[in-house]
Amino acid sequence: MVGRAWLSNFLKRNPELTFRKPEATSAARARGFNKPSVYAFYDSLEETLKDPKFTPDRILNADETSVCTVPPKKVKVAALKGKKQVGGITSAERGETVTAVMCMSVTRQHLPPFSIFPRLRMHETLKKGAPRGSKFAFNASGYMTAEIFNEWFNHFLEYVKPSEDKPALLIINGHASHTKNLAFTETARANFVKVLVLPPHTSNKLQPLDVSFMAPFKITHKK
Image (tube, rainbow, N blue to C red; front, side, top):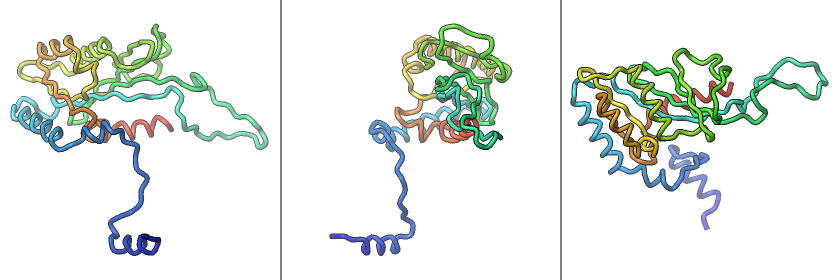
């Protein structure tokens, strides 16, 4: 039977190997990230970019992420020694999950964020501190729906202003609110927006915002 000595010698012979904790990856993601689907996506992207009208500032990626209204990481504050409880005022003890929709171009120009709150009515205090031009939507779950995605797309058109001479390429994931949304498809076609959908279950590898922006954003938010 293989023992510790064999393993130790094996690792010495192969210094490029190391033990790491694996990230939880669903079976769907593991199956979805394969050469045929990835190559097909990049073939479509390459064919689209042959049109010189799609300059870097007209190529945009949109993605959604969940943000808790009460960050899990608490900053330290000065308090008297021996004091048993030190509180900090938050919107709620447990917090609520808000969906934030981000959109950015290759040249790092970004749209004001679009936030979806898990509530049925707007309250003006929710806008406090939001970047100028931010838009808000509401539903019971706080998650994206086809109707809310159409609202966001109008927000997109307002800032990007695509035209026949300056069309826009929008790269999004294959969420049902995007791909099974006839109103969005027709509006995009009528407003000179070319939509390219990432292969299913590959956004953690291929989605530019997911790979390079969301993680630092969440780390900053937790602070």
